[in-house]
Length: 254
Ligand SMILES: CC(=O)[C@@H](O)[C@H](O)COP(=O)(O)O
Image (cartoon, rainbow, N blue to C red; front, top):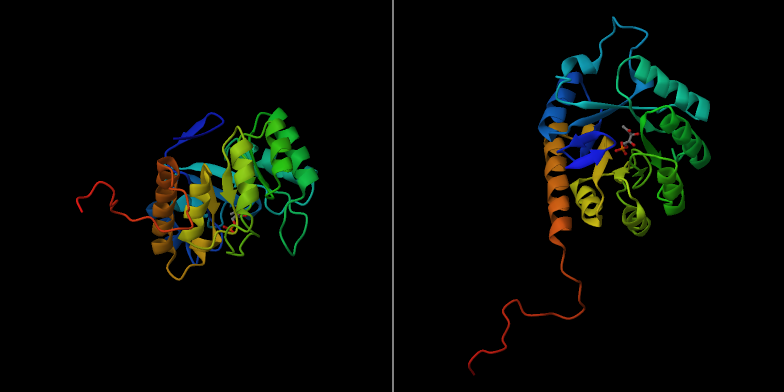
């Protein structure tokens, strides 16, 4: 079971809801993934235009915990305002803090992310900051009270997988709260790698929504999370340079 703040989840797959070809495919992909946590940009919601179509209306919201995110924010003030707006709209008190510093790399602003995290923790939110793979910053975030840390595998939407598994491992080993690898996942192989490193979960969007068959990919990601977690818990063998026969020959009659 995955525990974040006061919430408990069976699934360790967090699914983003952007860029699906249409609502039907999105609904099917979400269902088949068996995710329990859906993230979406508050700015993308039609909070101001309730008459406009809204993908949340397609889903059985009893089955999912919503994780609004502050995508689109580039300052502390914007991120905090978006989080408050999400809570005031009864979306959820969990918030993924995303403060983007650079439009080319979509890398997060470390200082603003830390500051927004401090403010939102004090206001009683369950806070999950999206961060880079910097272990020092990750420490500062959980010291500030973040309920989970979400380091990026590689730039958002790039599908490059885990560029710095060593630093991600440092974060995972030190962090006393769950670590969710967020962004840059390209295929189920990347998910297995993240989970085998010991990540508590993965958050992905583009790899599913832009796959040739998003529904099939959502199912593949579900299995990858389970396989990677099982592999981590089972404990892999050590890598060795030399071969070692699968059927030991010692003790056999000559
Ligand atoms: C949906 C969301 O929160 C994204 O900002 C997230 O970081 C996913 O990134 P990918 O699209 O690379 O999976």
